[in-house]
View 1 (cartoon, rainbow, N blue to C red):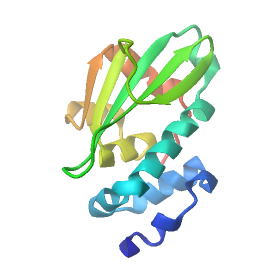
View 2 (view 1 turned 90 degrees about the vertical axis):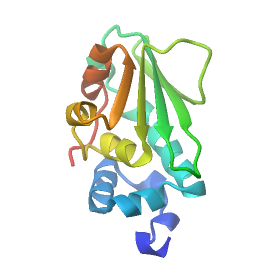
View 3 (view 1 turned 60 degrees about the vertical axis):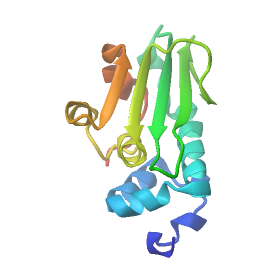
View 4 (view 1 turned 120 degrees about the vertical axis):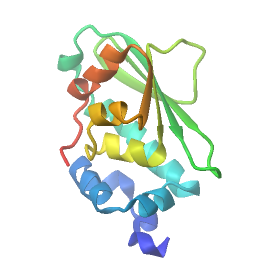
Length: 154
């Protein structure tokens, strides 16, 4: 991990969304793939999903009620990580692992594409059109998520 410039020792909880966006922007695809391996991958995903509740914009969500499932696929050595965000009653909650509930929309994307998406380093529309992200269910809801989460502008 030395080629990641010390990211393996970084306290991700202290990194602001803007700093995270800048870090991701500087990483090559190979470095992102290295970042998303093993324990470091688990830390990065836990930090990103842990922050979703804090970057949620309830005023933009209005009366929206939805379960959103995220399937973040790893390389051959890493399992798919499933996380869910539930939006209801003006709040967003996050849980690791799939529930028995049927999601209103499901995002399926690779680790590196997920990092680009949540850091504002890629256009969700372009990612969808180029099949870097697959969306199941309510595409209208999926397209509106950028309004209800404060995603950094890379």
